[in-house]
Image (cartoon, rainbow, N blue to C red; front, side):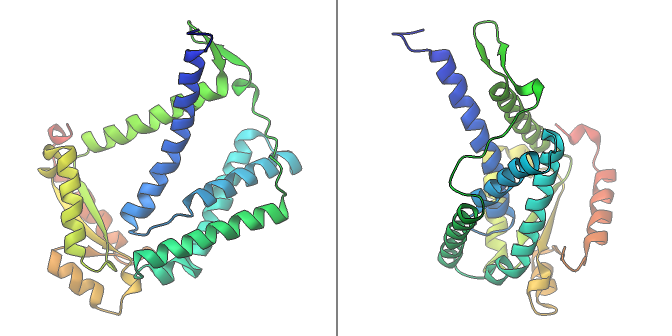
Length: 258
């Protein structure tokens, strides 16, 4: 206690809240970095998953872990449907159009949840292992908050190890972007700012979303960059990509994974 304020509890609460934002932001970095799409509705999908988890526990009697699985599955399906029906139409649109679209989608999500569920907070019963408090030596603190901190730290550590210990780099660039070569240069610059050693590792350039361009155009752009063109939707180029990655891994000595 300092001046009557429980500083330790405040710090732990701030770290736990920060970890939640970090976990959500990791997904946001994927949509904005790998997909090249300004998706301001990212939080809306997190909200959808949360409401599905609460509903699964409240109305279907599922436990916490099964409800998590259901929440992930429902959110993934909803995301895939919206991506095909709406997002794919704006991949080549200006960033302002993407911002306006996703802001509008946020408003629609909020209104839909309010209409279907109501404005009240939804109760969520935590499993026994996350209830109560845990003794941290200097303070007793909420178990679920400590679990959030541990999970967030594990994700951060896993991402760090993934970068530092990787043997082969794959630069994934959206083929529909106005200038794929500039996007690739930006990726390499940002990676070099993190660690110049990573730039010296074997690498492969892959242009994604080939199905969104006229026949032959994606391949032409890929050829200009010495890259591969793929389409996950049409399952085009994926087998060749996996074979190429395995061949590069076989050729890259383990000593390079540092």
